[in-house]
Structures are given as C-alpha cells and as structure tokens.
Length: 120
Image (cartoon, rainbow, N blue to C red):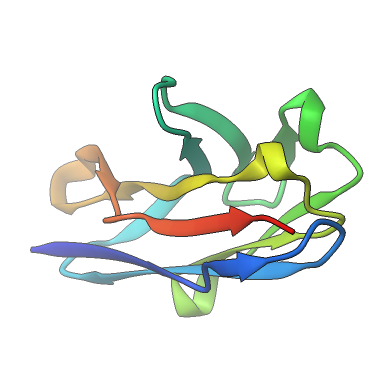
C-alpha cells in the first residue's frame, strides 16, 4: 500500500511563513509529478503548485513570488514554503503524488490534508 502524509500546517498571522511537508511511503517504484492543492470552505479544490521529478515547477498566479515548492526524491518528500501569507491563503492544503508502481502503473494518491489558517 501507499501512504501520503502531510504536516506543517498551523495558525499564523498575515505576513508570516509556514513550511509544509509531504512524504510518500509504501510499496512503489518511484514518484512522478507531485503537487500541493488547497480547498477553502465552500470552494473547490485548486492547484497551488506542482513539481516534476526533474524539478520543473508551476504555480497559480496568486501565490507566485510567495510560495516555493521543492522536493527531495531520495526522501520521497515534497515541500511547500509559504511566505507573506494572506488571510485568503487559509485552507486545507493537500498533497498529491503520482506514484509509479510495478509494471509502470501510475496512480495519484492524496494525503489527508493539513490546515493552514491565516488570521490576525
């Protein structure tokens, strides 16, 4: 089985920073793309940032220049550095990993989410 677990969320004030981590574990060959998504109350889940295995990144416009995604392939881990946080960044942040299993099968796995709350 495969597990994806996020950590690092919390309550911060506007302008502060947080670092989220997501680690994948279990029986698999490798991980392709990894990404961070978020879902605010009453809204749909949206892609925040993504990163390929070779390190190419993409961000939604509203977080460009404030958030940084990175990964450590040796540790099967992806990070999201959140800086200059705004109230509108408040959401549950989810990690998704494209897991490559035996025979080349690729499936997306979600973590359980970690709450980020930005409030004064």
